Length: 75
Image (tube, rainbow, N blue to C red; front, side, top):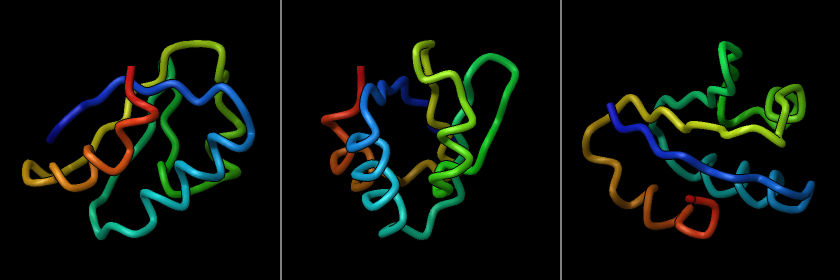
């Protein structure tokens, strides 16, 4: 499993992030505090408090292609 801190400041960022992660077969979640949602769910992401730090948890160790693709959102 890999964990990456990300920042999604605008609605356009959320849309671009969801489009990027949906191209990959990995199971992944977003964590904000104690709330966890599916990282591929745009509605789930909007239910989080996006003003706080968010962590992307990818349940695969060989996901460097995904991490490179979402580099613009990493902190």
